[in-house]
Amino acid sequence: MKPLLISDCDEVLLHMVKHFGTWLDEAHDIDFEIGHGDFANSMTRRDGGPAPTREDMWALLGGFFPAEMHRQTLVPHAREALASLAEIADIVILTNLQDECRLPRIEQLAAFDIAHRVECNQGGKGDPVARLVAEYGNPVTVFVDDLAVHHESVARHAPGVHRLHMVSEPTLAGAVPRAPAAHARIDDWREAQAWIAARFAAGVPADA
Image 1: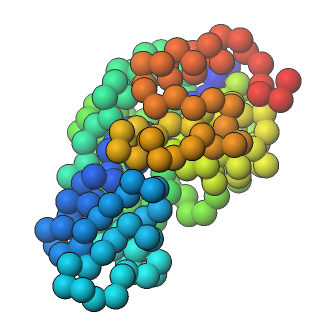
Image 2: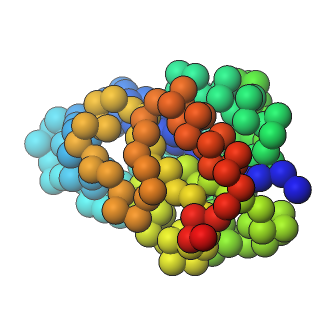
Image 3: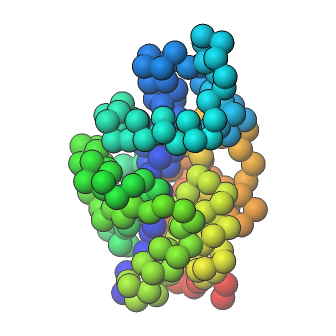
């Protein structure tokens, strides 16, 4: 049985934040400063209108996905790391997008020579991670994500999964503290690949 890698996509495999900000600038006359890590409080209308609400934020993200996904760029060393890890592990991309974005995400990743199973999710990732682990036969599993809330969710629902916190966007990484529920924080795929491979080689779950 192969080990299993479950990875997020945005700001783990593909840069999103800076491209979302560029689109807000061009299409909506909104300045986007994500330095403190909170999307909802990072947008300012240049016409002096009221700040976008959290509901506005979700609507704007809905405008970016999938129509503007072509703007996204590959995180350095992500493709090479996944290619190497795929020689020893199964890989699933678990992305928090609406289900209609699944095919666009598959096509988007394939354009970067990343071809692995993609599953969409809404809400915490603990339940879907637990289901995937069970489906693959409960192998040694590593979960990679940029959001602390998902590490907390996975810790609750699948405590045996090794949890790696990664924030690949440099302008964001410095403002985002390590997720308390993660086992490690690594923002570079060259180091992350080695950490993940070591967990696979050890062959024991996180709660052993």
